[in-house]
Amino acid sequence: MICQHYHISKHIVLIEINTQHAQVLYDFTAEPGNNELTVKEGEILTVTNQNVGGGWVEAQNSRGTVGLVPEDYIEVKTILIISFVFDLTSLYRALDEIRKLCGIIFSSVYSFDEEWDDDSDDGKSTGGYGGSQVEEGGTMQRAGGHSTMKLSLNKFPGFSKTPNPEVYLLTKHIAKGDERLPIYTGEVGPVWLYPQTQLDCVVADPKKGSKMYGLKSYIEYQVTPNTTNRPVNHRYKHFDWLYERLVEKFACALPIPCLPDKQVTGRFEEEFIKMRMERLQGWMSRMCRHPVISNSEVFQLFLNYRDEKEWKLGKRRAEKDEIVGVKIFSNIDPELPELDPAQVEQKYEMYSQFTRSMDNSVKELLAVGHLHWKRCTGPLQKEYRQIGKAFQNLSSVFNTSAYPRESTLTEALTATGKTYEEIAEIVAEQPKKDLHFLMETNLEYKGLLGCFPDTITVHKAAIDKVKEADHVVVMNKISQQDKLIMEKNLSTMSYALQAEMNHFHSNRIYDYNRLMQFYLEEQVKFYETIAEKLKKTLGQYTTM
Image (cartoon, rainbow, N blue to C red):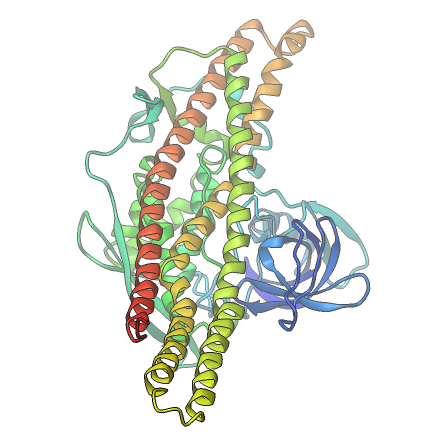
């Protein structure tokens, strides 16, 4: 059980998160001597330690056996309890902010500063929508009382303000000026309008800072966009704030991948800082490559603010933005013919099936990758060392023979043993050179694909509403003109989904093509290095 505090609207909220149960997604066979636990698909486990690290968690099965299980082989079922300390009249004001806490663990007590200056460098552990760190329902209990009520923790912050697609479907919209998001016909179908110059940025130069006379510490990163080459400084909480704003504004139309998870302990260790900076760089690069996100006012503010005053004013303006949730579709302007609802549904089914299948494949690759990494740094390394030791022991025995022509063979055997010991170290280090990048890219895609189910669900809800339109017209609840507007707006939503999927596919092909070239090049170097060492050792033996 984790109990932490968080400040919301000048109130203290006690958050208790219990992550004890997990369902096994894939079979896993434990290796003897590694403290692992054999599990079967569908089995329910009790998680005893989620902070093991290295892609592993400690869990207990129904028979009471405890051991390590790959974290990608299980799905943790989380219960969220939120307790409030405040007056009843403030309850409704805080509810909209509480929804932002879905799936979040906080690491310290936040300050009561109006300027949102918390005492922790880390904001939240954002697992993405599809990662579902929290169940759909949560229990909310007011401190000092005995009553409880169920609170629907909507995974779409913006969608909670506009509960269903009718808010958009039944309204006639004309996108104007800078808010307009055009969609054109490209070589692959509907596409967003891409900028002439690709935006990019570099996340670098992490520095440790402190406040409150050194009582509170944080890490600050320098973010430099290629458009200005002028660096701006941001802490992790600022990245987290940007993520929240992007989810709130765009998540109904665009999947927004989650940030790298927060860290409760070891936040200032060099290895962790390097890993976080690398993942923040990956996240920012992906956001920069998206034509809609990269051109949005809030993203431009994050990259280009000139001083603290401009940052705070821009932040307040972004937090008051009313074009969020399904309302974002009102800014989309496809310069294309209207689609038939049947075409819309066909596209929806195709994209839904593809993203589900790819999500499963990515998770499978991550699970295999975790196991291979563990074998390289554990059993395989140990086996090569044992082989090397065995050859050297054999050489020592031969040396005792007193036979005059022994030395050439024994020296060659000793060299062979040392070669295999060197190979053991090469094998253990290799995952850092190639598998690391394969895993990181797939982790990015796991987070991105986890967002698609909820984004696509918005479209499914809209399709169902339009299907009901004829019946609702007969009941005189809407007019025939309203029905036509709904069909037109559904067509706009479909074009947005098509443009987004085409953007996703384009990036996917680029990313995996580049990734696999790099991975295989490193694998070739790896095997060539081993082959070269073996050839050199082979040359020490006399041809008989």
